[in-house]
Image (cartoon, rainbow, N blue to C red; front, top):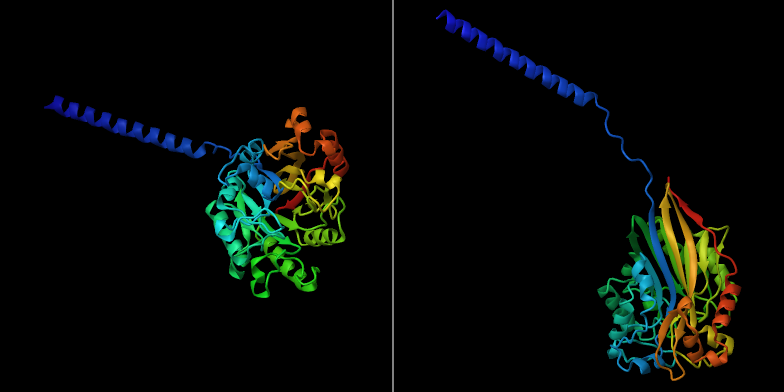
Length: 403
């Protein structure tokens, strides 16, 4: 009995000691957890980059239709330029041909254009994120042409800027966030070939009064309101402008006035089109805005161009593809790595084998077989033309400092 009591006492002491040990270990563990230094968070500022590709007018003219024979056929016209769009984050072009469909009669002649949905499929295959639809051909097939074009682009998840279903649609603005950077878009044209009726004014972004093509106070008020509203809701504001004088490298007075007007309202990048040739690209307004006055015809097929002389018949067949990076770092956004590539619109002496060819892939064989080679359309002419237009590389610039 005494042994049992002693044994019980001994066991009881062991149990108590174990409990004490467990308690001490637990306290040490918890204390250690509380006093250990928390892992430091990585506070290295992150860099966000949006790589951009901008091209000019997509103008589908009759010789191209004649070559492909059926609208549904893509015979490799875009093969050499598609990689640029597929590798970037943001691609923008000016769609200068309505995609009204066969119901509105297909046309690539007579300065009155309309494309089939099959041609639209070719446009969509490029991988464009945004197209401007405000241009002088926007109303070539009236309201139905505008609405059919918007419907098609919406189906293909391409943002259209410059034509609208109605005023409510226009008031929504056009925005897109890419890699954490929010872009806003506006687009306007000097006029339409078929005048937009007053009751349909909201359907097309015009910067001039239709009756006399003047940039009046009324239209300045419209642009000011829309641009300022877009500016409030984005980090980077891009304006696509259909403006200027056809067949000249010179910048006209309205381009100068409008570019300053838009820059003062906070536009960061202006992409210009319409003159059917490339024009200069520069920083304007004390480096506030990057302005590309005209990128030229990216897609076209008029081999005659009877409205001008040979210099601009040649210029009709080469455009400028601009590439750049929009970079957000250290609470500021900048435009960097601005560059361009001449893109040749190739077709042979029989008006066949159309192909868009980057300058560095334009071989001597292709050069000498181009329809206009005999008229002085050579690699040397292209090189000289663009060196005169843009003699120096453009610098990087900060466009927005965030607080």
